[in-house]
Figure 1 (cartoon, rainbow, N blue to C red):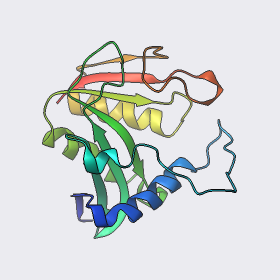
Figure 2: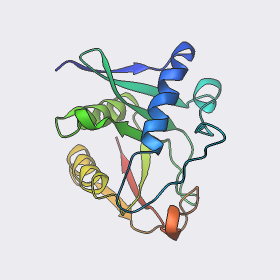
Figure 3: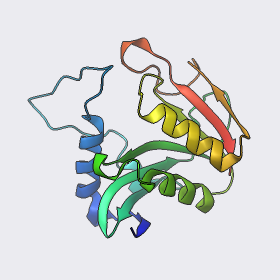
Figure 4: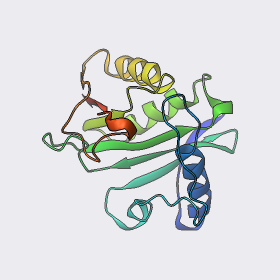
Length: 171
């Protein structure tokens, strides 16, 4: 399978919006989301990836097909610890999971942007927890820190008042 990351261009914004909607409304076992019947889902930070310096959006491509996205930011997730980059959002379509697409995308991004990184994950997500544990451990050769249920993480809590786990590492 041919894998690549492609910078999201302004004229591809609708594709990213559609992927973000799938990402935001993906079913899970720990959160029931209400559908807003009056207006479509809007990702509140989307414009930042097209107007702010060092905010980047990438499509994950598999054999020239959109397989997901990676959104990175220069903002710290942990409000008390400065960083160079944060993986703000990350999504791989279900049909491309467990075949190396996500690992490829993370490794590629970390190779492209050298520095201090942060990543926040929902500890209840039984699919992403082992993924991030393995990918970050492999990439850093075990040289990372994770703060579980970290109350100083930006954006507050996930639904149900759950604090996110935050990874700290360097690429």
